[in-house]
Length: 310
Image (tube, rainbow, N blue to C red; front, side, top):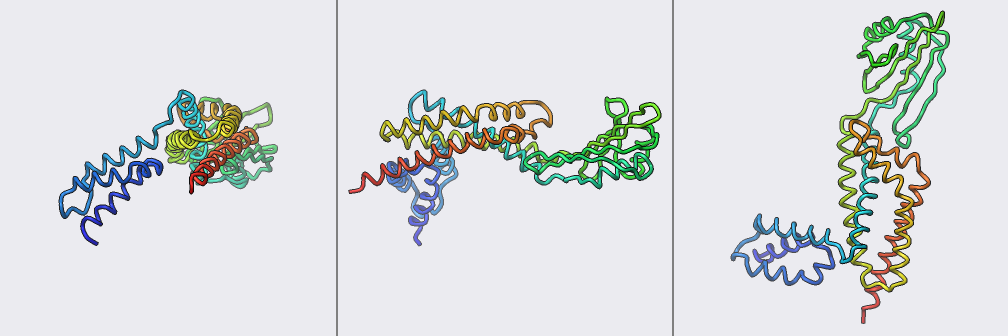
């Protein structure tokens, strides 16, 4: 393959940064300009050309069809997709967390009491089943003080530290975090443990990355649909618009809740999944309507292309 052919092929690859509609209209013109300005024998685009082509392509992809309605639609689409991205990112982060079982809770109670104790256990599931929480209470435990329980847990390999609450210790080991509550009530002792996985180190970065990618994807989706609908019949634009409005109304509360987790300082942002877990039917209905609207917009564009064929 000759040098000009190699350079032309690489220029064509770079032009994929532009939307297809833009390449159809201006691709030949851009390629001709680039080839005319290239030095003889050159086989690769320059760094400046790569930067300019990619930047120009991104500008065109993020460019919206004219109208204030499109700007509003793009902002809402970006916020909704950003919330969904944060939820997916937080779920991905918790997916690799340790899932404590009943045996861990039983071990904590037995070690703290320095004897085998019967216990009542309650298991809770969060993050769509990827984050487990076990709450266990000892049945008729012997008398024990928080200091004694803490010393026994430390001897068993747990990292123990006091908390701001009287009679409550925080113990961690092997990716598991437990709050051990030891309260003397007359001749009896309340001995209870609340066991959860330790927050994975990359759960927060995945949540933030999901939100950023969702924002970009939502804006790009609105921009693409806006251009697809420009030449569509009025009734079809109205149909897509009504579906989109219903979707926004259904997704409003989960989206606000998700962004509430994101802007809250501390580890709360990794619980962004909870915005959709607690409102699963509403979020599913809103997402379903959004997918129908996108599919309808795609069909509109396909039919428009077919109609232009001779």
